[in-house]
Image (spheres, rainbow, N blue to C red):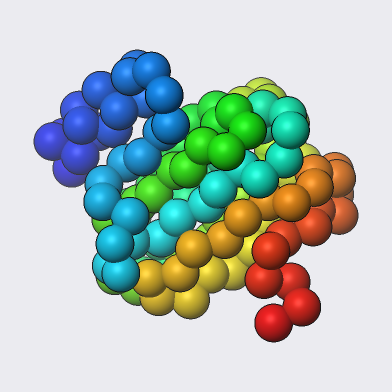
Length: 111
């Protein structure tokens, strides 16, 4: 766990798009498809894995985890309310529009 946290800290400090782990088939990912910056989290349901960070427009955050998970968007890291979405194993989700209290528009919402 310490190694994952250390790698995540390096990834979050790096300039450019945020990607924790390879965004391949065994990763849960969220993409900020809005024109604003928001705080995102990616959490595995069947494990204690979690990644978080500020994403600017077009940036992606991934958690190398083969199971189902939850992606969430918040206005800031200190915000208590945001919106979340259940993602299938190896899934990717994109935030299209942010709205507080689970009123976000997600790319796969109509699937």
